Image (cartoon, rainbow, N blue to C red):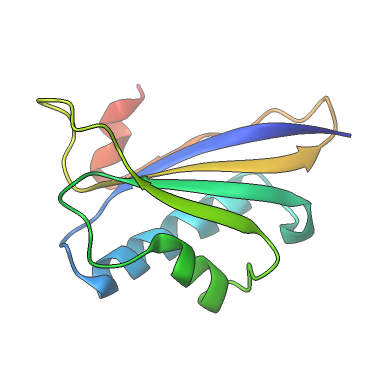
Length: 116
């Protein structure tokens, strides 16, 4: 068994705890579904948010609402690059898997512009 990273991103409607909660749950649920993941195989998750999002920690919602209590998670601010997509939540989900596993990256809402 090896580990592989799965990238995902979503834009968040507003800088509120509820909007960050909603976007976090939508993105993680989509990443899990698209990749047919078992929660017990997730090694760790790194969340980044653009500087205009600071109303809540995405990891809190993964822990309390998705039951990710045994998964190591960290939240960081994304680099503040001029002209970059605003109000964006990005995720790097690392999972234990077989070598043959091909990650399906997930980009939702305005973040779909990050990948063609």
